[in-house]
Length: 349
Image (cartoon, rainbow, N blue to C red; front, side, top):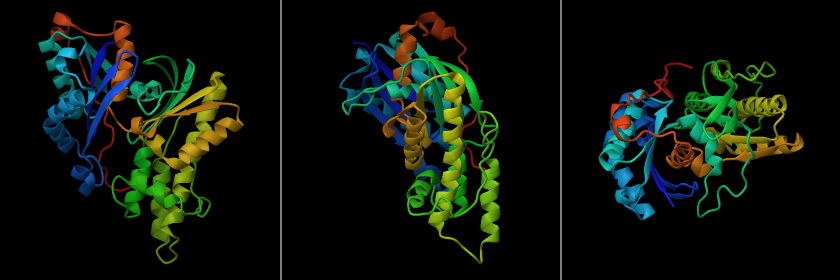
C-alpha cells in the first residue's frame, strides 16, 4: 500500500491529508480561516496567504499523526497548483516541493476543480465512495469561486461544457447573505434560514436559464439588492427572501446539469464543491435526476468544501499514470500556479 501526502491551500483553508493509492483516506485535516475573514465579509488574499504560512506546518504534522505514519513512510506528495489565489497556492506548493526534494519523493501537481469532481471516489471508515459513477460522467463543480459543468472522461481529464461568465453560485449566496445582514460565510445561513421560508414568495430572475450551459449570477445579486432597497416599508420575512434567492440559484444549477447530461447522452451526474453542501440543492438534484432517469451522485459533505483528501485521491490516480515530477526534473521544473482568484472581497452588490 502506497501513501500520498496531499496539501491544499488554494483559498482560505489550509489542509493536509494522507491517502492511499486506492483512494482510501487515512487522515484529513483542515484549518479554516473564517475568523480571520469574517469581519471583512469575504476572503482577503493577503491575509489568507499569511495565515497559510503559520498553519501549513502544524496541519501537515497533524495529518501525518492522524494517519499513524511519518514522512519516512510517505511514497509521494500531491499538491494543488490551481486554480486559486496565487499567494495562497504558492505556500502549499513550496511546502510540497521542499518535502519532495529533501525526501526524494515524486511530486504530483493537481488541479483543484478536477480534484473536487473526483472526490466522489474517496473511501473512508464512514463508507464514503460505496456507490460511484461510471466513466464518463457529467460533473457540476459549484463553489464560492467556481461554477462549471464538465464531462469527466478519466481522473483529471475534464472536457468543459459550461462555466460562469461572471460570479460563482457560492459568491452569490454569500453576497445575498451580506446584503441581508447575515454573518459570513453566508451560504450556510441562507441554507438554514431558507428552510423556514417560502421559495415562491419573491419573484427573482433565473439568469441564463434555457440559454446554453454557461452560468451568470451577477444579475440575481442586483435583483436582490433592488428588491431590498424598494421593500424597506414592506419587508417580507428574511426567511422568504433567503428561500427565494436560494431557489433561483438552485433552479439554474439543476436545470443546466440535467441539460448537460441530456446533451452528452450520459446517465451519471456528480455534484461537487462547497455549494454541494446546500440541502436544497441536494434534495432538488436527487429528485430531478431520478425523474429524468439519471443517477445523481452527491459528494459527501466532508469532501465538498476545500480539503486535501480530494487532492490526494486524484494525485494517486495521476501518480499511477506517471504524471509526477521527481529528482532533477523536480528541482529544475518551473511549476506555475494558476493565478485565477477564487473568492475575493468585492464592494457593492
